[in-house]
Each structure stands twice: as C-alpha cells, then as structure tokens.
Length: 449
Image 1 (cartoon, rainbow, N blue to C red):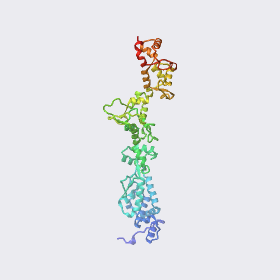
Image 2 (image 1 turned 120 degrees about the horizontal axis):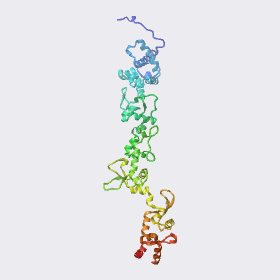
Image 3 (image 1 turned 135 degrees about the vertical axis):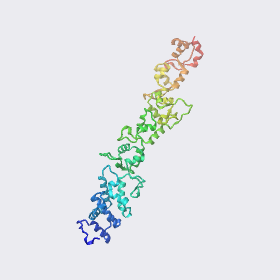
Image 4 (image 1 turned 90 degrees about the vertical axis):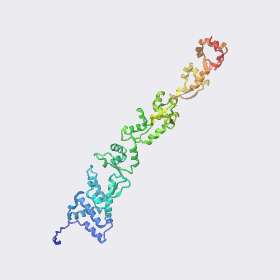
C-alpha cells in the first residue's frame, strides 16, 4: 500500500476553487440562498462537475477517463454556469441543440452524458431541479405527444407539433401538411432543407387553425365530397361557396371546410324529398337548365334561395348529382316571358296592329298590369298568357273571323251589320272590330253560306 505521503500533490490552478468555496459556505451555513441551494450539497457539487465536464470536453467525453484535476476544473466551470440559475442552464441546452447537425435529433446525440445521467444512470430526486430544467427545455424544443413520458414525468398536454408528428397523428401526407402550414403562416419557409421532425410549431396557440387545416379539403376532394359533375366546379367559387383559405396556395389546393360544404348542400336540398317510383319528369340541374336555355348557375341560385318547391333526391346518387328538379317549374322562374305577353307578342297572338293591342290592354278589355319586363327590365304593360287564351276563346276580330268562315273581310263586315251582330268593344277606341263568339254562334250557318 502506498504511503499517503508518497502521493503526488497537484496544485489547483488559480481561480479554480469557486465550487470549493461555495461548498464551504453551505457547510458553514453562510451561503446566500440560490437555485443551487434547492439541491442537497452533494447533488449540487456533482451537477457542477458533470455540467462542467461537458462544457470543457464535450457532451460525449468519457467521464471515467477524467483525472482529479479534470474534475476539479470541471466543477469550477460548472459552478460558473449553474450559479446563473435555471435560465443560464437552459441557454446552455439551447446552444447544444443549435450547434447539433440539422439531421440529428436524438437526445443522446445532442445532450450526450447529461441526458444519460439524468434519465437512466441517476433517477434520484436530489437532482430534480436540474432534471426539470432539461425536461422543460425538451418540451419547448421537441414535439412530444400527450401520452409521452419525458425524464420520468408524463407530458400531459402537448406543447409542440412537428410536421412529422402531425402527419402521424392525422394520417395526412407530411408534404401536403407542410405546404398548408406555410400558407397559413403557422411555419415559415426555411432557406435550408430541414427534416420534418425539426420543423416545429405551437400546438396550443394554433390548435383551432390546425384542426381546420387538417380536416379541410382541397378542390378535387371538395368536388368528390359534393359529388359534382364534370362541369360543376364553378360551385366552389363565390357566390356559391367561398374557400376557407386561398392565400399562398394554387387553385387546386384551395381549402374548403366540410361544415361549409354540408351547409351549402343542405341549403340546396331544404325543399327536397326522395324521388318516388311513380314520379316522372324530374331532371338534373344541368338538363333542366338546358331545357330553359339558361345557365345551370341560375338553377342553383333558385335552389339556394328556396324558390323551387318541386325538388327530389335520386336514391341511387348522392350530393349535388342527386338533386332533381321539375323543368316546368324551372322554366316558370327562368323564362317568365313564357307566361307573360307584351304588346309585340300580343300583336302576333291576335294578328292585330300595335294600336289595337295597346288599346285592348289600356282599356281593360284584356287584363294587364304595368311592371318591369323580366328580360330587358323596362317598364311596360304585360298580360298573362292565360288571360290572352281566355280572350281568344271569348272574342274574335273581324279579320280572324273572315279566315274562319272563308269570306273577304269587307263583305263579312257588311253582312255582320246586316245581321245586327253587336261589336264587343268600341271600334273607334280599339281600332278594329271584335265580336263575342257567343253573339256570333246563332249566325255562323249564315256566315258560311
């Protein structure tokens, strides 16, 4: 056995006794309260030593090969760092992470022996303060899930997401998620290529936006969701639907929310009922629009505003493709002139002059009303086609009567005077002769001879 007097004594370098002085103060009870004082003295000393070793020799330096002098100097170096409290230690951990290669994200690779010592080699509660600093740092720089356990303690609530963790959690493509995250401003575009694990963002602050983004559909997905036809993509644009997000995305990548799509479809089908086997004549939106010679978008607007009441749903289809409408009802709305007659059309129907057509309307002989023309929007007199048909059934002009009986109009006029058939209206006011068919009926055999 060596004599203790034979052991070589090495003088400690000047200024390297700061840890020793600190321990003396703790033992004598003269040390001021500090963060290190929250640990037992032996734990505080050991923490200073192993942190100091990583500062001086790197995080992967083998501790067993260190000499007494190395440990002494490391203790002084570590004390200089840890006396600055948890903020100083956090800054050191941040430096370690910052200088680590972007392709490296393993905790042992970044924090080396510090991580091993606090997670596996030593689980003593005496080192809880320094362990907490490392754990908080890891939670602020790594995308842990709610169920993960970090340094012996459950995470509880996720703080961060990475592109990869969000992709794993949602089952969505990470490249697609990254494009959306950048478009929404949740992450910024890096000048260097960074792995998806290292692209981090606040999971709590962006929770609502992330949920919308993940569940949103792009244009092709929205078209399939609504079961739109090949030419119905216009429905995904205003005034029908407005994308949830467009900025920073190509048109095909514009985002739509399912609740918005569901609300749009519900609005279109609020008057709809299932098509019954005995019901016929209902057409899809595009064909009904073609029948009315109007754009299909106008039929969609009628559905959105609830104007159409005869709406059915094809049980063999879904979405917009399942919507069936009554073409006659569509025509009534989109071709209002099919049921209204203006002066020029009345001239054709009664084969009379413009003066006569206007006079019949203005005198009330033919019921009419003044309103805006449904096509050119000018104010004019309009008559219902049903009233015109009723007028033609009750009255006949001398010109049409002449054709019906095969007699020249002048000869017919003279004969009607001879037979004392009364005129239906004042010819001076109307401009031509009109007769009631009921008044002519007793004389029709004489008029045809």
